[in-house]
Image (tube, rainbow, N blue to C red; front, side):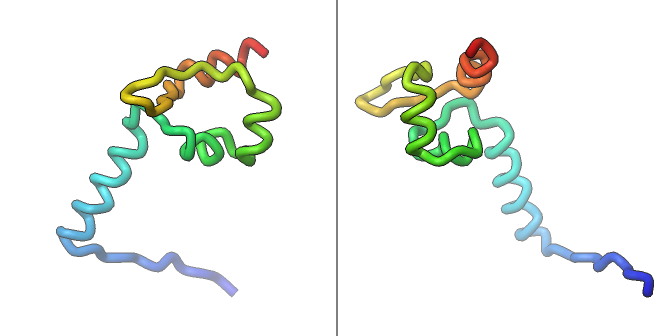
Length: 77
């Protein structure tokens, strides 16, 4: 049995929303603490236990993480 791909057609508005979401996701400079588990593919408790020195910056009382700094930190472990 041969399968065939299904072609999806988006409206202009749906495409615009999708394009904006994808662009924001791939160009995002700063991560919040809640974003780390998804970014690192680790549980929050694993991050706290194994990466206590993860570099961050505080802006207005909010911890912000630079993905490039996180990557460099992990590479240097």
